Length: 351
Image 1 (tube, rainbow, N blue to C red):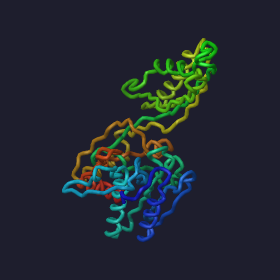
Image 2: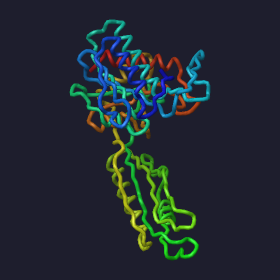
Image 3: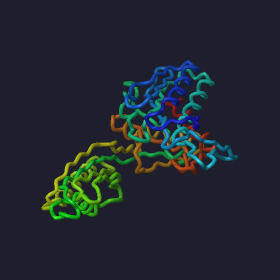
Image 4: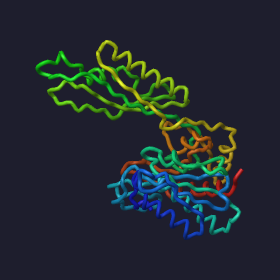
């Protein structure tokens, strides 16, 4: 399945594969309307009455797998080194589909669960953001972490993106530079004063896209840039957001330039406490397959942030997707097997 090419917003081939998988096995399935801006929506498969637990993986890959040539070695699966393997997150899908097949083979008809395969996780989390979580679902597990099986993410930050536009005044850069207000220089000086990178042990700030289209003989009248703020709590993200706006306002004082600022949440932070039933259930499942559970705090965002933000407690599980997004991606066969065993334990043993 990794050879099926499906980037964010173009997941149709994978969605068709999943719908066919469900229908040929007599499982209830449907596709929602989350893909209004792409060519596919989220695919939802249910067994029995759907149960209380949602299992999740995403359909898109960060880079194309159109030219993928998988290489099966004694202990692992890799690509030939010319493309990504697509292990993020075709491995997660493979684990869940294999677990479903094993449960069907054992005629475990009283086992009930819901499996969701989302779109656009790699780009915007649009799939999970537009997902209507069924009323019967009270908890969730995503199979989408690069850590080895047995390791899981119990805490992850929230993130706000921001867009800034600095407006100055154009003039001829050679004949009358004094008459202009250089938006590029002003914006650059403001950015230099920001605490970019790791702000504190639980917070980061970054600026990515920066745009200025003025010709070389024109004092730049307009500059725009965007970035993100991440931290472990909503209050800290909001505090940093407010601080950033104040810094920009102070930086532009007496320059003659003005600015506009817009920010919004990409995803919210979450923490699953040690005594939470969701976490205890997972640790029991991990031990039952002969592994030792290990909970970690991650700085990445995922569909799990969205589920928690919607009020459905969820945890992201390690599946062993090594070196994700690079041509050196690989996954150990042992990790695929162990992650599938954990999925089966969770599906069969609901609290």
